[in-house]
Image 1 (cartoon, rainbow, N blue to C red):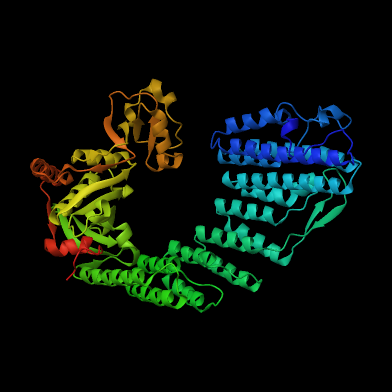
Image 2: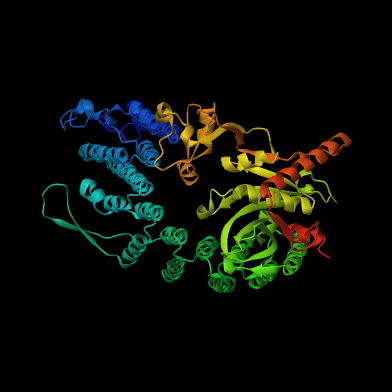
Length: 639
């Protein structure tokens, strides 16, 4: 521990010779390098907080919870020689504990830091020798303590205890260590409040910093009645940027816009990324594209900031989310003019010409969509392309909804209850041509890849997922597109794809999926702890691989649990974390063509069995339907 110290106190008096100064420099350089290596080892533990704490305690045994510093009395120099304050390593351990939601242990380390600081600062002040060295040691001690406090405040935010983080900054830091919080500590508190969604607290913090509101505190931890006034630091650029980000991420777009104005008023010029935070807030809230357009006007008129392609894309996404396609087209034209005016070095004339052609093609694509009836409002607006009559009293409307960047993200296939006018769910599809996969030119081979699927909670258990996939597959066959699936993590979708003959690609994880009732009572203890009511159980011989696929949130959202033992009866075998291909898209030679025809016949049978006696009708001919679903690709002629 003595060799790995970052801030150490020894009983040896300072020498004044050249040899002593060289030795101190080598020791300090070595201790800093060792501290960095130790902190990297701790951070590499990830969520394994036990391992992280073990590494820290092995290096510094006096940090053990059961040791206590009371054995190190102020007159015990032998123990003081062993004490050190490695702020970097301890703060890293606090961060790891915060990620593991072990705030009590993180707070214990902070209390131990305060005790160490009191002992080491006293010995530093009592040390005789060069005054500059004493001053530097004292500053280093304070910096290490502040580093630990900032880490603990951040850990409080991760654990949902932003009020505790505020207490640490406003009271604990001074009352225990006689240290006033600096602006970095306020950065940590704002971030903690952002993670907890405490936007009002963030606004209060900024207001207090702007006004210089003082805080009255007792001068020490004893019963002294002397009071001191703590004045917060003035807000810097990072305070405003972090506060605007907090408002944006919590859908407080009006507060974000006001903070942007206050930032300018206090002399800080926002950069383009700060403007992006406000526009992103408008995008998250929705129905605020007009505000985004007004902010874009201000950006373009501001001589101190230059809008880039990301700026225009965000505004276009705001317009697209609200269904304001005409405004989106106008912003596209403004982005062209802006690129020419700003002489964007990232675009050559050839690239710009290609971009202009692509945007023109994109405009023609929406002209094609207008051939279909438009239904819904705002973000729920879609183009009606077909109807599936499940029975005489039940029918579903099928529609397509372009994403805000369809050339990159494709479309959504929307399903709406035609009787109740309720949205049943949707499928996320990414559409590409063969040249995107194989690099071949002048090819008309098209692919429709499923990214994900959602069924409304009120309509689950009705077999809708299979019906949605069957309708999608029939659409693919009508427009001569080959179906496939991108990397899939949802077991129920993987199970449904298997029913229609999809084959997993290489590299997947084999998993058995079963009803949760199939888990034997004796095996419940082996299941991953679930704080929710699960519907399905997952088992894989490679248990660690399965754990790496899903976070706790994923399991909760999909109502799943993971078991370490097989269920009884055994579940159905599926593959996760891999893509899927269908045999109808494999190969071009004669033998494979025969297999493709057979696979296409089998696929038609699966579709008919799934749709049953229901009738699926698409309202336009296949050529127009192909333009509507793939027309945003430049190699698809629209004329």
